[in-house]
Length: 78
Image (cartoon, rainbow, N blue to C red; front, side, top):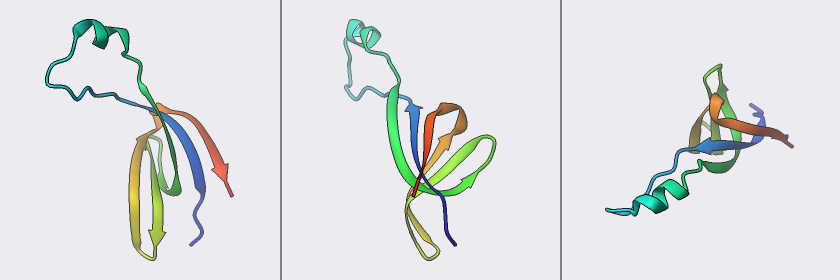
């Protein structure tokens, strides 16, 4: 089965990794993370887009489930 390949730009949440963080630094840099994903469309409905980086028969790898409301841009690839 031939699947559509997309490049998707979407906003993700950011997490701080330190056990303690400087409050001023946290408040200064609080922008969401912009993510670029490329993959084959496994499913799409009104809520989510499901992409896989790799497909081999009935097995898939690198699956991302992206909320549709987080998508900023999408481009179909050949």
